[in-house]
Length: 428
Image (cartoon, rainbow, N blue to C red; front, top):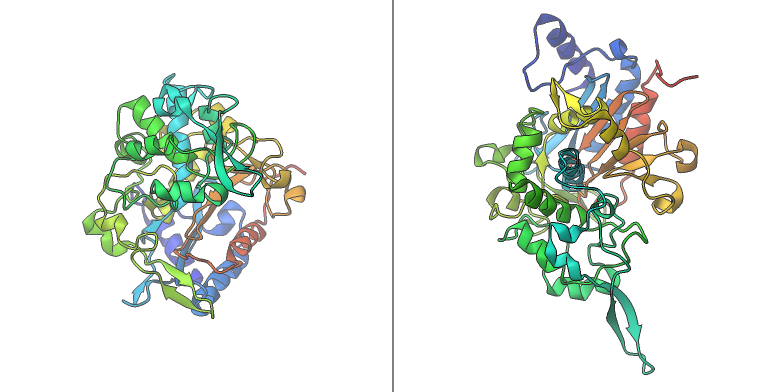
């Protein structure tokens, strides 16, 4: 739906009756200090990228003060079938799952069932005897992966900050990880519980000493197992009972119910010569999120959701841990999660990292349009989200593009969301 038509629908909904219980309130942009004319630039940009075939389609939300001021729905969810993108389209959100897992862990911290400094082995004993991989060689030039003991145990906080030394197995460790079935972040096809997978991971060497470096990998998948062990629930049940249910996230799953399968967007990739190509079923699973074994609940990259469901989750965080009368976390816990915990380890020190989120401490040093304290992340299928506590802003951008071919759209979405602010909440 084009932007100006959407604004009319928003105004009608806002003044003729209440929204559905699960729907965030809609307002005219000017009612929350945004400009309709400037948001039209974002609408034009997204429409142009879809029309030019740089991406098949996308759904974008801009919220301020907990209200949706912009919803952009462009392009197609399935080009071959001619299915248009809809506000209710389901997306594989990949690493956006990590934020949900981090919240789950911190809920258990608040209940006294988990401590940030707990050793991981308290919940998964297989990690009591981990090793760290090192590049070893002899005088004849033969190379192999040596193993040395960790300097200290991996802690829950290490996993939340991605400083546990846990990688995705690339580089030096690639062949060892592949031999054990770890060749990507994608677990939806696995015909075994996530706990079994992670116990096998514990037998492999880590990529660095705990606390020594920021390394992206299976940390959140491990934390998903910690949630299972500490709560006594499967990760699927914990998320639905403790997070998705209270937040009215009615379209968020590890595996899509068959009756909703038609709403799942197709994954496209950037073709080498330009344009898009539909990715095969075998690549990161066109169908495994629907037809898969439904056993592997990946806290690191396994969820499917809608733009609005995920916006509800983020608004809960921006509100200090509560939404619509349901409190998941205390404001002090959210504040702790969204502070830099890693010093200068991440992004050459230009950005920080908290308990599950990238943190912008200094927009000038980072060179990004933002406010100090903005936090967010994204997913492998080129999705993006961020939260700005100062401007009381939430932005969610959903698409299904892998590989993205170096597309430059994410930075533009960020910039055009901010340029639409005409009333700033920042102190002069």
